[in-house]
Amino acid sequence: MTPHPQEDYFIISKKYPIFVVGDGVSLNFDEGVKYPKKSGAGEATKIFCEAVVAEAEKKYDNFKEADIKGVFEAGNTAVSEYNLAQGRRKETINYFDYDFFSATAAFLLIKDEKAYWWSLCDSGVVALKDGKVCFQSPNGWINFPKDWNEGKYEKEKIISRHRDYRNATENGKLIGYGAITGEKSAINYLNSGVIEDCDIFLVYTDGFENYIELEDFKKIFVSWTKSLKKDIEKLIEVKSEENPSKYGREKTLIAVSTKG
Image 1 (cartoon, rainbow, N blue to C red):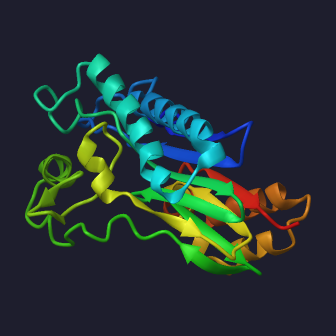
Image 2 (tube, rainbow, N blue to C red; image 1 turned 120 degrees about the horizontal axis):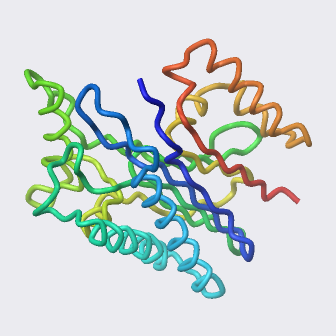
């Protein structure tokens, strides 16, 4: 199996406490076809993160809850422009190897003792206090039907997932999952809000999703020592060797402390 190029991306603003992570959605190819050395999904993720941070920085001084979705829309619009420039629109994609370049992402902005956040699909935000989870963003797959793939060939299954369920609604109801494709309907799947009374924040892509459940992982952030990064890396090394499919995927984590 050909290893994929990097498709995660993150930005920490140099001006303000603004953080965003993104995870490019890998394209699908028929067996035997090599994955491109440069990932269009990785580029779309970079473009998205840059646009999000630029918009959030512009709004920071007067930032309020009503601005949260606008920050997401700025990034999604940038991805739309990128896809169009690559000739990828609904009329031209096949939802398999020639699909929208897309991503999942999570965002955090801290201002006046409030943490403004959003998440899409399986990138997320977790807040901790004294090593305990005091907030976790919702599961981005909660609206996806569990029996959608019964009796379908794998390739047909993938095409169906993208064509019929990605950013899809039916009679105003969510019926699938969200992804940053540039489609305006992606915002229907955005989870967002404001967190208060927590002091540690983790913004992550889905490779860290299983780590959030580990007590050993959460304990690392209680004392916030200088060895924090090494402690995380050591745990990743152990768990990745123990169960590569569960703990060994590409992943990105930004950890933020607001403790005095």
